[in-house]
Length: 363
Ligand code: SAM
Ligand code: SF4
Ligand code: SF4
Figure 1 (tube, rainbow, N blue to C red):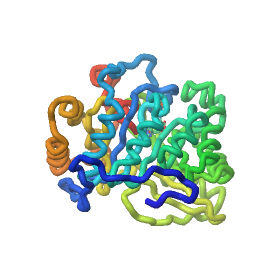
Figure 2: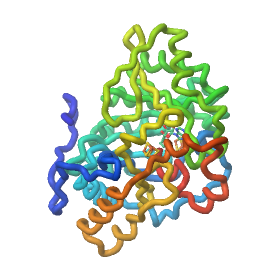
Figure 3: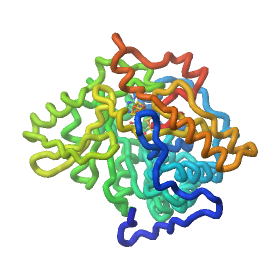
């Protein structure tokens, strides 16, 4: 992707190793390419959103198990050699990982990676937005569920809601184009704010993506009754603005995009009622190096051990290739077929294996 005018994005160069980006990505059992990689850089968070981290106690990953920047860069280079073109930094709260711009600069130099994005709650964005942009970060998504500080206090246990709002401003001021705002819509919490959130996005030159509440690991209060479907969201929006047009812009991105009669665009990710598994090209790496082929996967592939052992890049690439080629995961679609669907994991199961938590595997 070409860097916007004025950007001092570092040049991507071929590394000295033999890891040359593949022209043809590895494909799974449903011909889905290995295209995008989410790197969770920490499992820690400075918020406690009730759809993600509602408990009071958590089992944290041991610090020594977290992949170093060198390991993250090496593994990204290997993934790029197999077809990965997009990398998203997430967590936990990725801005809690000390020195994140240093990692961004290293990833920006990996040949084959066209786009580096960040998903953040925005609380700490003001202080690093410029540095991240200079290091080569392409895109920022800020999670913003409410415009009301008193709701954020109860729902996400943060008293610093103003810092998230300021983080959205900071991203724009730092020169990020197309800032996205992620809003998980929950019945009785923020389904009365859709219009206010759309107007906020207009005012800040951003694009909102409304996300259906998902029964992922960690959502231990999830209930189908609290899910606001895409149809319901569209009905609320149309009752205020009139007919909304679908944009049908294709691609593997999960958000269906729409346009209001006045031209404002927004997205809806119907990951619960209409999952997009059939075109899913994404996988995730926990901060401790477990590679997950699906957000709903019970278990993953340990890449830390080979990274820290004597495995060569080619051996690790071979492991990743063969596991992706065997991939049949369609987690969210499988959940659709479950009658009386309840939570995915009970708290005890999450405590026993924190890699099942959304905040550990990276949303
Ligand atoms: N802490 C960062 C943030 O909140 O942006 C990054 C990690 S967070 C796990 C990534 C995304 O997952 C956020 O946009 C969040 O709203 C979303 N998420 C977490 N739990 C969810 C759930 N139960 N249903 C839908 N989206 C969820
Ligand atoms: Fe909220 Fe993100 Fe933290 Fe989860 S990881 S509690 S979504 S801020
Ligand atoms: Fe992809 Fe799994 Fe999510 Fe389906 S549930 S879209 S296969 S990560």
